[in-house]
Length: 98
Image (cartoon, rainbow, N blue to C red; front, side):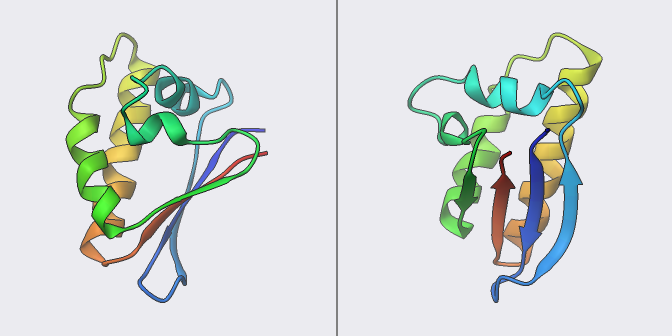
């Protein structure tokens, strides 16, 4: 099962819900990042949550992701969109693993 990506507001209420593709492209991109990247910490089999402070760093790290395919480009765009929405809401980005 692919990752689910949930944007929550500052009160942890869900405002947006997205999903990774069936090939787990977003998860694979996150797992391929350097060990110093927050994205590397996205857990495939459990939940991972990022707060407002971390979202700013994630948006910076997104710009360094090397994209080779259309699927990867779409995954990065999804991550950028979800992170931006959560940051503007002073909220959280939650990854729900299988």
